[in-house]
Image 1: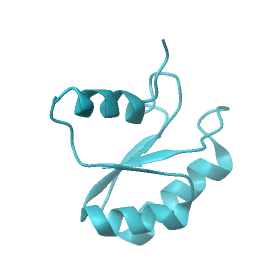
Image 2: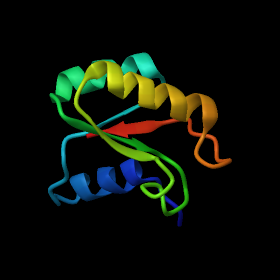
Image 3: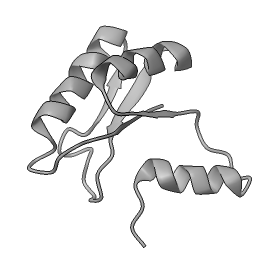
Image 4: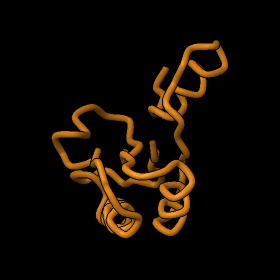
Length: 91
């Protein structure tokens, strides 16, 4: 079974295993809203079904809403080394 990180974390949560607070979003504007709701700094994580996201620039710690939106916009528009990104997890 292949799961994206946010799907696995939802299963953990439902099983009573603690997980960090996070929101999954599909556009850069919503990333800003999620970052504001969670509180800065946040981590923006591309949701793709492959490993090595951090090494490929798909996981970034950000300190401002503008930076979160900028990173998410680049992920949504450019993908992650050839893989399309349709969701990001903001934690």
